[in-house]
Image 1: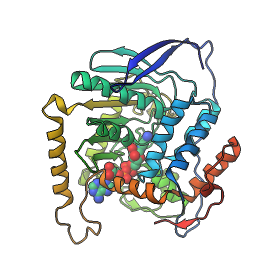
Image 2 (image 1 turned 30 degrees about the vertical axis):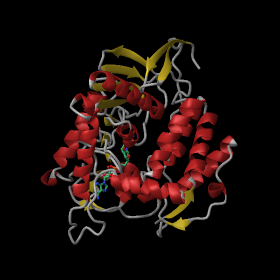
Image 3 (image 1 turned 180 degrees about the vertical axis):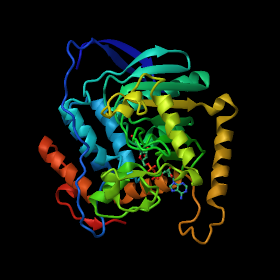
Length: 418
Ligand SMILES: NC(=O)c1ccc[n+]([C@@H]2O[C@H](COP(=O)([O-])OP(=O)(O)OC[C@H]3O[C@@H](n4cnc5c(N)ncnc54)[C@H](O)[C@@H]3O)[C@@H](O)[C@H]2O)c1
């Protein structure tokens, strides 16, 4: 841990958190880079999965992160964020991230395990948080806590974060606000990565820039919209490629404008992931516009990196360091009785979910957050379903770090995906 000046701030009511302003580093640290690992394979057949009890998985992830150098509290927080994603069905952004991003980067130093995020500028309702190149999962959790505390004081709180790293599933942070009776909004850019070109463009210069919003209800599953601004998170395309599966052709567009269902076209950069809405004719400008909004609110506002900088047109290398996030929290009680508003939210969402389904909608009508709540209940009951390659990666990590893994991972019995 670097030497630092300590600051304490009130987080959620009844809790406080201390962070430090680190002394300036004496020399820049040229860290080795780690490439997101994708195992190319063309083995066709059903995807195989493993089920791991949620509590065991959470303890294991915490232990791995502790071995990677995180302090106990940070490891616990990050384990909650990671297993939230898996337990809610966002399997590209849970332990898959631990295997391919968080553990390797903590171990090679590209993510600083001893980071000390600090508020560098603050008003009653807003704060700028410098993540000190620490784990985004922990830094964004802190940002959300600060935004929640500010919202309780002023009605609305906003925290912009710079110098952070990958934060996983955006919905973790917003559902936390909703569980506390607050409206939560969370977003992240992907640093200066080039994952998708602008609508109609050819140069990949934007991230999948996810956005989440959650609204509290009196009981049952809250509204939790959690989405990339591209038609899907690219992790799903990479997973399909790894497993030799095709993807819906609405996901990918070749450079000549024709669709393709072969994820290899994406990997070879011969096709790009479509924006939410698809091509311009079906509303792709809306997904693209949302992605730009996320970059504008996560990049220039906080001083974080962002994709569409002039150098990208001259072939400047992309990178996903200095990622920016934004957390916004609104306290409904600034507008009336929080209980009455939450009860009306429940009625609104129930009306949607109970409305008649069209014949083609075999799963009926639902709302954002409800499918994940069901999946979470199933994960608690039957164990968390993990893709076979992720289970293998976790078992290898356990061996590398000599951490005891859940029996389900070591004596894997693979099942066809549900
Ligand atoms: N950290 C990063 O850099 C990054 C980048 C991209 C995505 N992500 C994360 O990846 C995850 C997956 O993103 P995605 O865009 O592939 O999500 P998705 O397509 O699986 O789900 C998007 C949303 O649609 C809702 N939904 C699904 N079916 C529905 C239905 N029938 N009716 C109503 N709502 C329905 C879900 O509740 C969810 O809120 C998210 O957790 C996201 O935050 C993270």
